[in-house]
Image (cartoon, rainbow, N blue to C red; front, side, top):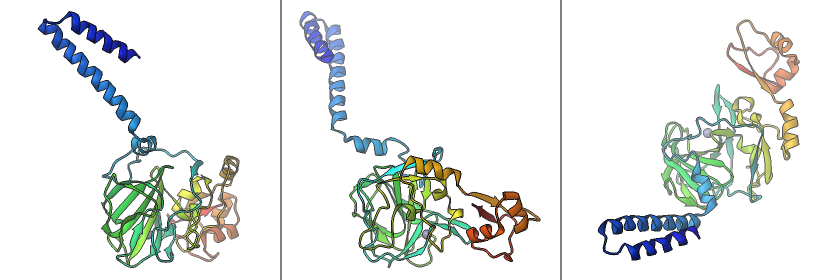
Length: 302
Ligand SMILES: [Zn+2]
């Protein structure tokens, strides 16, 4: 309404100032202003709000992790529209290495066996945030999804998409391979939330090839599910799904901590210092009572 009145005023000014060059120039500028505002409004209405929010923040197509200065507050809730994801590969999934501690390093994703040239597809709808070579990961496609998750598909041999492409669940992203630091062809799949890698098996079932189940439509994530060193790449961590905020908060009390072995430490000293039994330390860390522990080794204390 305000714009319409301005428009009428401009017409009136135009009528009275006819023949005066200076005024007409002023008027032209005002009219351009008015049209620009009007166009902006139209454009704004035509943009899909979901598209705006997904690219609104930390949208950088040049880096693996654009969330470096973001602190994630735990616990946080993830929501899914569906009960199933699309399997990133078309053959039966064989997980050859899990999320967790591996060869004294953090393995922040899971490895799924494939043959070079196999199609790799998007697990959910989203927008390609990154499609380029990354040290270690090789040719990598990262898709950002509408619930804030990013899925990372690494060691590809070819790309089928580019950054800023909108993709549908099940759409081809590229071909699997061995690029980057990969021994043998496989898909290294990472599930990131605001730059933090979540244990993918907490959210998704990779063992049932027929259903590809999402564990729950609403699921709470605690810090434990984002810390590779309290998981083992050789076995699936025992699942304790947190479906409500109350459950998530209650679980914080039981959260595990990590003890770094110091000079002169023995299992019994560590046991006394942390008020936990030797048997429990051994069980949690898959070690024996007579195992040699190194200075700097990380032990999970539950
Ligand atoms: Zn891997």
